[in-house]
Amino acid sequence: QQQVKQSPQSLIVQKGGISIINCAYENTAFDYFPWYQQFPGKGPALLIAIRPDVSEKKEGRFTISFNKSAKQFSLHIMDSQPGDSATYFCAASMPSNYGQNFVFGPGTRLSVLP
Amino acid sequence: NAGVTQTPKFQVLKTGQSMTLQCAQDMNHNSMYWYRQDPGMGLRLIYYSASEGTTDKGEVPNGYNVSRLNKREFSLRLESAAPSQTSVYFCASSEVGLAGPKNTQYFGPGTRLTVL
Image 1 (cartoon, chains in turn yellow, purple):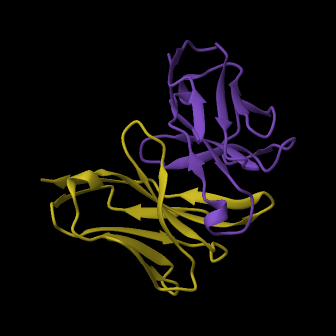
Image 2 (cartoon, chains in turn brown, yellow):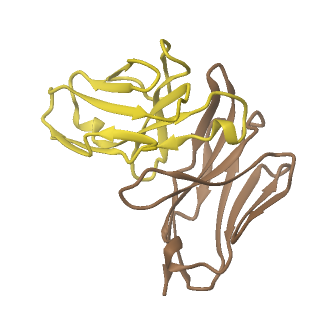
């Protein structure tokens, strides 16, 4: 119920291509879905986030698509660049007695080839 | 602003040794968190502190203790380290609140711990 599934585990994309990472959840109490980007040796950093009342959110080359009925959401990186090479984590959060309880997916390692 | 800082960056312990991981944030956030990151498992919450003076267990608290020293600092202690605690530890902070930008978690750079 608390799990967030993420696929693929790793992804190799040519420069200029589209990177797509998928996540799925079970618990309908989740009400906030952020994506984090992590470079080697660094902590995760918030990339983009969406609430379940919208189906899509776009920020620059990054887009989240959200399918509430299927309990799935995905990250699309358009015109992928070598600088996008990083590990990406999806997450889902729900209210708790301390604010928001975040559950993270296992991560996708993206490599963008020049 | 330095954001979230963690010390040390790397540590090697022998089984049974103890140590404290330090975390500090300068964003005046109310909530602070400790996560561990293991390959293929994402980030798992160890302990959290909703506000100064309060702490509570997360998903994987066994073998750890925490102290919210003040609003800025939140430390994680391993009393008797075990090889299963080999991991990368991240501290994070957020402004307590409802879902959305105000509850964005800001992460520190991490501490890579190896227990032999």
